[in-house]
Length: 419
Image (cartoon, rainbow, N blue to C red):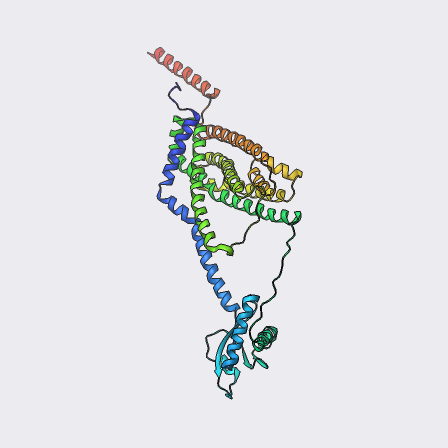
């Protein structure tokens, strides 16, 4: 009777290919890709504009009201010192070049100008005078005095070259740096998992409403349907992550040193990225298997939201567990977070950033694969029991049929007697 049915793996491949192609070439998938990019682009534009506004507001200028020779000497001295001292010096701008013997009130430089003039420097390099708010001019007195002294001295002489003797990085600083990398990797893994795993729920509930899932369950084993849907949604998620990662790489190349650099993990960046993709797949499959089980019990979107909320809160607690265990290497809490299936991907990714050993990852991945198989098996069994209602016939139905047959025989006998 089952000779024409596909095997579990072959049927899972058919289901996965069907769902993957249907989602990937749908119109909504394009907007799904753009969804996370809009906040990033808007946030980047808002941040750049805000940074520009802050720079404009945070760089007040000192207006110079001096004779031409003195003004040029002050500008040259300020530029020469700024090349060596950085942006610690206030910006100088010439407000008015005075003729020899010309009188000018420095307070007039504040009126009718669009420049960000916070103080006015007048007098001469030998006797500079700062005019402006009290707190501002007293704070700049040292910088202005240094520029004036350089203007009087003339050309800036070469500074002596400083030799450096760097010490080796201590174990404490190395561990602190790797801990930051581990924390960033865990946070990224958690955000991607929670953002993308919910697609499994909506897909299953939609097909339950259209009765498609029942047709699939009648044609192929239910385990194959669950495996196919899980791996199809995982493939769709990996496509989305690839697109977002490409955009992030372009932003990183464009921003350059503006983006803070994370310390190198213990296993190196290439291997950490590979393990990150692998552990994302396992975390997605583990959480997706639970969501499939939830979707098998839900019939409406409201029920999905009600049933998935405890799982989401539990996953948040699991993330907190893995984050705390990351700070306690070798402890019992870390061992528990590694063994517990739902926290294992997060704990092991953090361990990859702190410990160069690779064999624990092979053992952890084998354990996680086994847990995925168990969860899919349990979820498909629950779906068959709660939705398909497949199983042996109940004794009550047999008794009811027997009573109906006896009653029918009695009616027939009474009819025969009456005849």
